[in-house]
Length: 326
Ligand code: ASP
Image 1: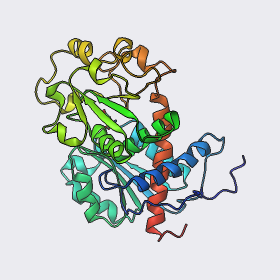
Image 2: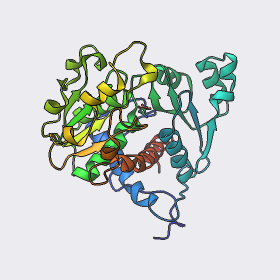
Image 3: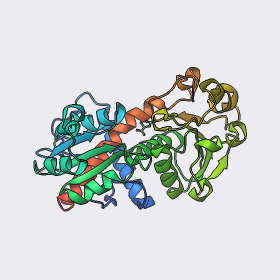
């Protein structure tokens, strides 16, 4: 397909998502989530073409402001903005005035004065991105705030599941490992519950948040029991950088009890798929052989879906800002 004449992808259904910002999955309806997934679906095909440039965001400025390190999320937001035609700037936080003691809000107000249209922010403190969104004039996307939410990760996971298993409703999804520190787990639990999936969380008691039972999930401490007949096994990285105390006995012992290998995976449904948001600690939370098994692992597809989802989110937010006239 020749794309040179295409200026934007017109989604077939009206876009139900109506926010000015995307700060979390919390508060999104099933219809809003579905409309973002449907829009992203059209970008999947587009991204597989030789030519990948649209003019949807032509003339708009997108600033990526990452206070925590990132590979997949920052790269895919950058690609997403560029493929949609935006001017994309990555703030080099390490060499910015943040190192001279400037506060988050001063940095945000400085960038705001440059009149961006979209600000994509990752920050180590839960709630920081929401605070920032209240101060600036443009749309803000949460690219991960502390242990709170990582909405585009949950959306790309949902798109990956939907493409491979046909739907989300009625599936049983096990989220395993460091639930306590994981914004990915939190956003996924919210999204999967909203979409009618059944969610199990499997973790040692030290890696569960207080009142985990109130999250609308089933809690397990034993991988073999928790994985029984599940459709999707979502593994989480041990967030060693957020651990202030010794929460796991040793890496070896952790892998023995909670690392995903073929032996534990055998308890899941025979068609079960394996996911991991990355970056992976191979041999700690997941065996390399399982992660690299193309018959069951969706890890590379998750990365691919990340670009499509981020294009959909940037597109949807800028439609809102221009009064839904696109
Ligand atoms: N990349 C994901 C995040 O930023 C998962 C992780 O780092 O473990 O939350």
